[in-house]
Image: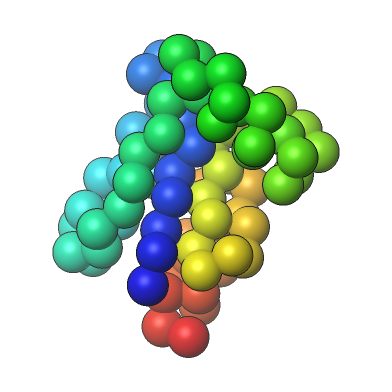
Length: 76
């Protein structure tokens, strides 16, 4: 399973998302879109928007912290 979290250091919901994944013992790649322009463009291409957090779980996109959707994709 691959989990990528597009985030910024100042985003409170990004922190919540990463803490939640850690609490579930899910390893993830944290991508700071405030410093990585290519990653920011990749995120915008996938979602059509600039808001964070964005999760990419095995190619499925979740915008924002949606615990139910995260749990559903993690258990799939």
